[in-house]
Amino acid sequence: MFKQIIPGGYHMGELRKVQQTPTGTYFICLPRDWAKNQGLQKGSQINLEISNDGKLLVDTQFDTEPQPKIITLKLGPYLNREIIGRYLLGYDLIRVETKNRIDSTIRNQIKSTANSLAGLMIVEETTTMMVLQCMMQQPFTSPKKLLQRNQASAALMIRDAANSFINRDTDMAKNVIERDDENNKFYFLLVRILRTIIQNPRQGEKFEITPIECLDYRLAASLIESIGDACVQIATTTLSIEDTKLSGEVRKLLIELQFTCFEASEQAFKSFLNKDISIAENVRNMRTKIEANNIELENATKNSSVDLMPQILAVVSFLKQIYEGSVDMADLVV
Image: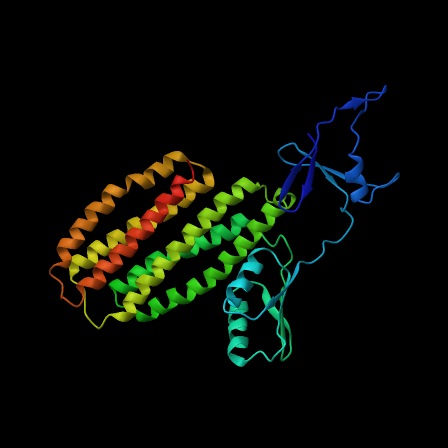
């Protein structure tokens, strides 16, 4: 069955028989309408490329530079979300235009959105127009390396966020929140790359990643992002409490809980990368330890002050969310 490659996937065509010349060469005729649409004629050159899964790719545009993807947006209540959406869809140039003046509030919002996305810069600006351009070359960098970068950062945030609460370290708490902003940039960049590969499977050949694997990477990236958000919640809780010390028992149990959550996160990601079911099961088996620790913490918290008790239970809840996110990642192996 002939498959014509287009951005976004394949179109199914008619069945054609493979023929053979007297000298033993195999050949197949290209569909006439397709060849005309591609501007092919006698003597035209095409590029044949074999993919990792054995498919033969027919490319008529192999010697032409890809055209940049450009979009023009109008001002509206969801402009920031629209900019992020077009960035994730792989647009190279995002133009924001209006007949009237772009006021300073909207202008600052656009700049803030651009700053939150890796590689997106404002390259032109007038009173009625702003042009944002992604300055990174596609396919940027390896999705695996980006995922590893965000996972390593999120894992360290688990320790630092929990320790900021345990030790009442407000500087560390603020640092955790700042690091999450940077992680978000790389998360959006990863999503942009994965969507580009899904739309153009040939770009995944370089990194040995298939469109199906992109879906798993997208889920894993989302889970890592959720773990980072939970760490921010813990850090925010640290900043909200007054100068009240935790009891020795509560400190000990919280340290044990954060260590288990950190280990679950590390092991879950390892099982995901290596497709190792045994490691994934080890993450699931940590639940017994998590639940036993939670019961001890609830009992120990009863002896804490009324003002501090809700914050302790909130931190415990966020750490349990981190563990559940790790279990979900381990489940991707299955």
